[in-house]
Amino acid sequence: MRCFSLLHAVMAGAALLFAAEAQAEEAPRAPTPAPVGSTMFTPQSAAPAKAAPRARRKAKPAAPAVAPGTPIATYPSFRLLDDGSSRVTVEITRKVAVTEHKARGRVVYSLAGAAVPGSNSRLALPTSVFHTPVDRVEVVAQGDGADLIIELREAVEPTFRVFDTPRGSSVLQVDFARPAGDAPAPGIAPAKRSTETRRIEQNVPADD
Image 1 (cartoon, rainbow, N blue to C red):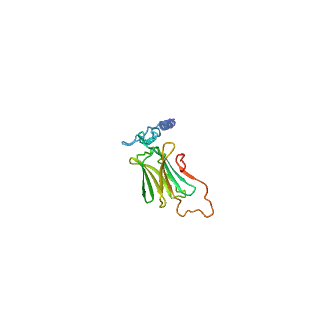
Image 2 (cartoon, rainbow, N blue to C red; image 1 turned 135 degrees about the horizontal axis):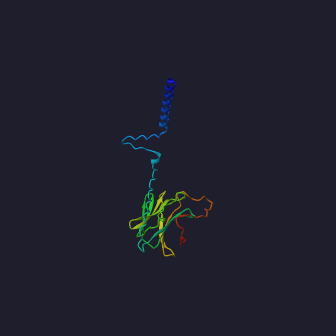
Image 3 (cartoon, rainbow, N blue to C red; image 1 turned 90 degrees about the vertical axis):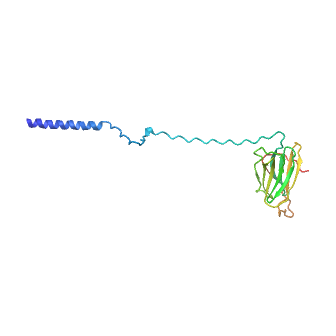
């Protein structure tokens, strides 16, 4: 009888110990404290990265103001004529003094007191696709006036003139002869065509 009671007591104690261990495993574990001086990263504490601010576009500089009455150089153009010669023109709102400056590979016509306010008029005209001594045409502001710059592919002697139009404006016209060695074959008439490159369409008066 005493042996049975002792065995019963041992079994009861083992059951209590087993229950205590099971309860301890089910209890939530406390978070492990982070070491001093460290930053703990958790998904909940992660903040989304901020997008980098967009760079502000720089405003294009405004075209310089032009005083009333200032002659304006506009409508630079290039034309390949039927006889193989080439013609460069630029229109000025009123007549100005024109000076020719020749250098190797280019010829420049200075338009005294003229302004070039329009960005379209300042765009260069590449002419290398045409059979012509002219390689490039450009109008630029220069000092207190404007320059018509004509880049050349071969040494030529251009001729120029300035004439008035019925609209009250003036036109600077520069002519270039047919390229050297470009003679039409005997018995074959030249093609009747006129090819023109220009930024803005205009009516150029016919030759006198």
